[in-house]
Every structure is written in C-alpha cells, then in structure tokens.
Amino acid sequence: MASSRTRAYDDTSATLGDFYTSDTVMQACLDRARVAAQTDLPILILGESGAGKTILARAIHNSSRRSRGPFVSFNAAALSDTLLDSQLFGHERGAFTGAHQRVKGKFELAHQGTLFLDEIADLSPTGQSKILRAVEYGEFERLGSDGLQRADVRVISATHRPMNGIGDQRFRQDLLFRISGFTLTLPSLRERPNDLPVLLAAEIERASERQGKTIAGLNRAAANRLLAYAWPGNLRELSTVVHAAVALATADVIGEEHLILGAGVPEASPVTPVTPVVHNDKSTRHSLRDAIARHITQVLEEAGGNKRRAARELGVSRATLDRKLREIAKPASK
Image (cartoon, rainbow, N blue to C red; front, side, top):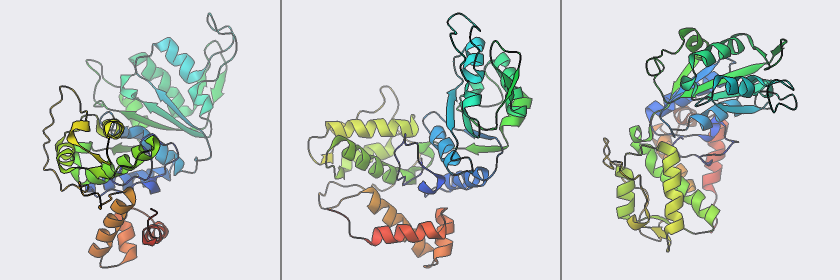
C-alpha cells in the first residue's frame, strides 16, 4: 500500500508502522489513519478497487486497542436481504430450511474487535436500514429470534463507489453519518508514481522468495513499461503482474517479454514516469532493504540529520526510525 511495505499485499499482521511512502497524499492518509486508530470512531475508507482498502483496515485494527480482538471481514456486495440478515446477524435453529443449528453472525463474531464492511455502497436500501441500528446502537436480532443481542464492535467500512448515490438510489444519509466518523481516501497507484519503484522492488523480492528464485530486478525496457503503465487494478494488479513475471523469468532479470498486463487496458499513464530503481546490471541488487535504506537516507539528509524531524516526515516513531537505521547498517546477507 505504501511505498516500501515490508509486508505482503495480503498479509494480515501488518500495522500502520509497517507502511512508508514518499507521496504527500498517501502520507496524509496514513497520518489520519494513525489518529483514527487511537479512537473507537467508525471509519469509512474510499478508494479504487485494489488500492489497499482491506489491508489498511487490518492495519488500523492491528494498531488499535482492539488488536487482541477479532478482525471480521464482510463483503456486502451481491447479497439478498435474507442472506444479509443471516450473514451479519446470525440465525437460530429452524429459522429457515436447512438451519440445523444456531449460527453467530459477523457482528457477534466481531465482539470486542473490528467489523470490516467492504463495498458497503452496494447495500440495498433494506440492507442499509437493517445495518443502521446495529452500527448505531450495537444491537441486532438473530434471524428467527425476537430477543435483542448486543456486541461491542468497531466498524470500518469501505467502498470504491461515490457515496452520494448508487445508480438511481441514494445512500442513506443517516447511515453515512454513522459510518464516517473518520473518512480516509486512498489515492490510486497511478496518482503516486514515486512509490512505484520501491513497490516493484518489494514485490519482486517477495515473489522471488515464494517461488524459490533469485531475481535481481527488471531490465530497462521492463522497468520503463511498468513505470509508464496506468495500473487500473492498483496494488492487487501489481502483485499479480510481478508474481507472474517472476514465474516466467528464466534468468535472474525480468524482461519486457515476461510482463502480462491487463488486456485491452491502455498502458499510457497520465503522470510522468520516475527514474527506475532496478536495472539490468547484475551487480546492482535492488532489494526492499536497499529501497528503504535509500528512502530513509534521503529523508535524513533533507532533515539535516535531525532524527526527530526525519521520523515525523516518515510517519514513524523515533524508536522505529532508530531500529530501521540499525537494520540497514548491518551487512546484507548473501
């Protein structure tokens, strides 16, 4: 999600301290997320598909006082209202055909933790009304029961749609107010080109490790093509493209012929490509460690060597910066 993540795209243990970025808009988003994590207010995350909304939600949970509690994810898209009831609020034995036992819903499972409602803008008007009471009061009814249940849940919602309407139906304003104590907007990958080189280097390193390969990086043609690509699928697409390229690579450098980019999607980018950080020189290894070291060194230089100021610019604590400096000072393993 951020420019030099040390975690995989789908990693479930990342905290907000694991994210770095050289993009000011992304940094502002992370700063706001750190503030939000220290509260119990509901959070609404906006951003394109694949931009990292789920991993940001998990990182907020992992950085909050609820981190010891469960993180329960629920995708609200394409569910009938009956299924929504059962999935979110659970059901009693005999509530419907095939209900052979009592089942807890997502709200109940998320007690003392976080409930992540993905694609909340896809909820039907009926679904919106049903979820409002649970979000507002923490109360709900299992399907087939007249008794009220309560759950202590912090709600984080997300959507890739504009929240002022869904087709011809408007999203309930009272629900919108309830789920947006904090609103975080994730910029798309094409909006932060300076983060691309480090993201690519990090993903190449992860893919190489998972596939048991030693990949030095990209040759110049491959790097230029990836840095000019618009990335409509954002981080999710980047991860898929890189892992496929590593699988196809027969040597220790990824070439342009190994890239499988979105069919029918224009590759021209509206932003000016930045200088690639990976080369075809086998003696130059651009690992995630190298990228982090360069970024930290640059920020330290811009801060005049002031670690407190540099830590603030990086969006990390002074202790985290000191730890990173110790790590990059150690000789890299061969």
